[in-house]
Structure formats: structure tokens, C-alpha cells
Image: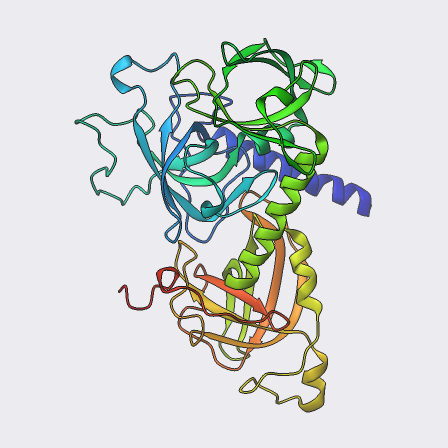
Length: 396
């Protein structure tokens, strides 16, 4: 009986998900009679609801999590709208991946070719576009809210794809390669431009263009993609050792970044009487960082210790109020903390890490309200002051 009820509940959830997807336009159904899904504050979007846009990173404001990409050319575009910039703002739960690991905008060099997934801008946003170019604007101009960014390395690695070198011609500075997946060609061979400045990674160090050989399995990050053919090779990794090293380096950078700025999420519920705040954390966080939530340290000065010695046996942390860009105001003073009462797994949907906690705070701040963004600092992490440009206090 229980098994039958479980099966019926699974079918009901599956049917609901299918109905949600069929109610709006997607890249898969391409039904222009339907509207694109528009994000709702405090709710994660349905799976498959974002629109994919590909282009090159040409400008970035890392503190506000905004960027310009030069959109790739396509057969659907007229020449008059080729190569126009598009302004994107990352959603609070928007994630970034670089070299196969979670990243921040400042990790990605300008000129890197990116794959993005976006939503149309807020219907209440009536501001004129800031990326108009000689009274022209990108055909993708309505897609302003970005949920995910990947470089070419991450995009292909996540799909178990790798480029196999077919031919190298250093006289003409050309590289011919075919994309493979699980030993099978995944499309026709493409010819890329090599640059004298192309960065070559080999084993634990740098290589040269002469080290690129026929038959190698490589990953590449491109630049000027579709501007002049398939693109120019910006960076190339010649072997699995160099790729693993690049990923490990990026993972370490991500760990440092999050430990210094806190784990972002939003408030699901706030119990004013019990002073308990429930937070669901966003996607784009390496899951090993959540292990630190269970580390027990002595209560810092000024924290609630009503439970006496029992409180010192519980893991703790603090919540800093943040904006939708994830920028905090004054995290040194704008955070309150207490005991972590519960850490549990919740449904993994686009934008969500699938991890949720309950924190009992000594005082509730106004920013601890459902739908508001916060950053969480486990007590085991050393707190460091951020540079002024990453704090909103004083910008108001």
C-alpha cells in the first residue's frame, strides 16, 4: 500500500513538472505562442525553463555580478545586429563554473567565450537598455537575468566531451579538431585559429604551440568565437593532468572566496517568537564546504548562551544581510548568530544547492525575512573584513 502511494506521489510530481514546462516557452519546445518563464522572487525556477545564450565576456562588474557578453553570430540574425553587447545580471541563485569548478566573475578573464542560461527581464523593469550600440540592440536584449554561466572547458567537461586534435599547422596558425563524446565523434571537425599568445598547459606547467600534436585529447577556451570562423584558441589543456590541476586550482580559489564572503542563500521562514531563521542555500557551492557546518567551536563573545555548557556542544554560525547581487552591507557588524539547530537536504532544483539549515539567533535583523538574501558564516571560519568595493554600506 505504501509503495503504491509513493508511486502515485511520484507520478503526480512528474505530471506537475510536465505541466509547468508546457505552460511556457523553452529552447526545446520553441513555441513562440507561449511566453518565456519569468523568475518569481523567493522561488526557484522550473527545470529547463532558461534560454541559452552564447557569447564572449567583454565587460564585468564583479561586485554587482553584472557582465556584458558579445553575443555569438547565428543564422537567425541579420548583419545589422551582429556582434552586439548584451547586459546580464546574475540572479541571486545564479551560478558560475570555470575550469570545471564553481567560480566567481572575477575568476574569468575578459575575452573568454561563455555559455549562459537566462530569463527575460522583470516585467516591472521599464528602464531603457544600457547596452544600446548606435541605436541598435541585441536580438536577445529581453534576456537580462542569468541563472548559469560556463566557460567552454566546463561546458564540454560536464557533458563528457573532449576535442581530439586532427591537424596542427603552425605555418598557417591553424588547429583542426573534432569534438568527441565517449569515444564517438560529436559533429564535424572544425578549424580554429591559433594565436602567438595562446596559453598552452601541459602536465604540471606550461607548454608551447609546438607541443600540440595530432591525436591529443584537449580542452580549449575560445575567444572571438564566430567572429572569425569557429573562434581563436585562448587557452588549451593538452592532457588530463593539466586539466585536473586547473580544476583543483579553481576549486581552492572557490573555497577561499566563499569562506571570506559566506555561503549565499535566502530566507525561507523566520519565527519571530523562537528567533529561528530557516535558510536554503543557492547552487554553485562546492558541497564539501557544508561539512564545516557541523564543526563545534566555543561560543564567541556576545553570542546567546542561554543553554550554558550545552550551547558549547552545538555547531554555530552567523547570518549577514545581503542584496540580490549577494553583496553584503557591513558584514562585520551586520550579522547575528547562534546555534545551528538543524541541517537537512531538500529538493535539488535549478538555483538550489539542496541544503537547508535552521539557525537560532540572539537577535533577528530586518533582513531576516522570507525571500531576503543572506550569507552564512559557520563559526569555524575565520571572519575577515572585505574590501570596501564589496560592501554596500556607504553606497546607499
